[in-house]
Length: 93
Image 1 (cartoon, one colour):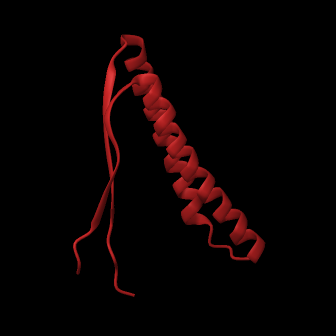
Image 2 (cartoon, rainbow, N blue to C red):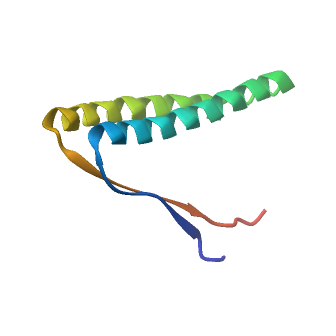
């Protein structure tokens, strides 16, 4: 197996309201992806939407938890550090 490819997507200090914009947009993008997947499966008559439905629920729960943390940070006027990376590795078929 080859070494994974790693990409730094976010790395820095941000005001809480900027963190809210960045991370909530990422979460919403993933929700939109899974929503489109569900619609595509329904149009094709493929009833296997449970993974995407579960993932949307998880993402919404994460968004709510994130909002609570960010509300506290905003109230304190605290800056936040975000470090987010993506690792991609090739899998055997």
